[in-house]
Length: 455
Image 1 (cartoon, rainbow, N blue to C red):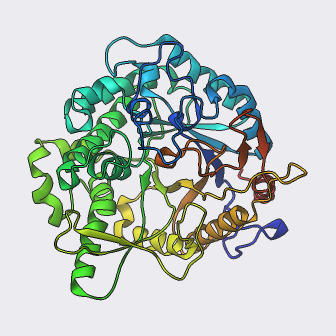
Image 2: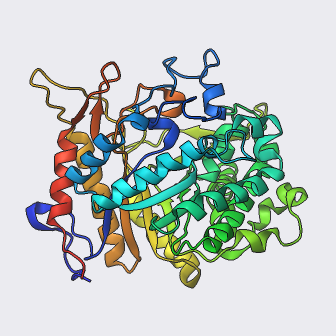
Image 3: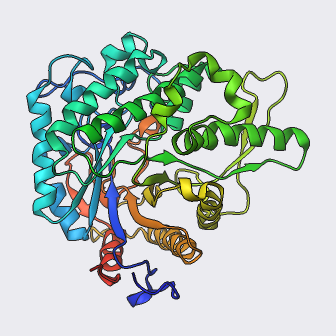
């Protein structure tokens, strides 16, 4: 390990320990396109995006970045970036078009080729099994409200693990189960568009149960490093009023504690237990609490939460985090919150917490090419620099953070915001699909080159 006494590397870059992994992340529906090609079945996002009015700009992921046909070009970009790791997701309906039954060989072959291409370019693969694109046929049977979906997920994990576990370095079963529950089933902002509020809590339990089953299936298939990718955010009260602090505590348990405590400790927060007990079968929490080789944290921004008016159906009021700059997405930029959250997280879970990977971190800034074709996205550079310094400071305070995967490689389809938000290190012209590295791409490549190398 390198000395932890300095926060700056060559060229004034943040310094992180030798052997630290710098990577980038993507998700299948957001980049692949080819929604019905080579035997792929429809996902809930294929269905959802074709409903009028649900996507901000009316776009879909039908083409997205056309990554399905441009894998070699995109892997070459990763090599040019100097990415040491690549976190991608596997489309479940590309493997099993209806979420169960026969395997679509062409789908498995696609990811097989991707993994081989990454390894050939010296890039360590991290595969996510579920990044929200549930096969529509399973949703028709109840989706994640149906306990059987977690069992189907285990079967899918076994199929993929058998094919790829010999070459994929790290595995994430479920991306952000809290966001999938909250936005997909509680608030209806994401697919499948259900507005169940607290009645969506069985979804959270079944996603976590699917995570546990998938960890077991992957290990049986020979996977040696399995973790998670949970979205975590500091939850700040809207005021010191008792009603606001109380709602802030409850939302923190719903958003953070429900997922961390079950995975790491094998129980749910006490205050939430009565709301979820009906979904729990004997042995479920032991299945969810599987030993993890890393704990993945997706961090973007803190949230400010208070009590809504009594006549509101949703008891939580989400307010602007004041006093900080914002991204083009409207998110507050608070790198110190990441540092503090990592320190508190380690203090809370101690021996139960495995090494941490930042499995996503990034920001939307929507500038395009100037008259010379240059995309000068200095705010993204500033964002990444500040957040990596926050990680470095947490490491100096004893937090075992071993990786940072930048969200994201390519501008892509940003869920309910459509194609309006650009998170990529690479600019994508959605008309021509031409890729153009941004200034942040050059900065990230120089950052990686500046870091101390492992043994």
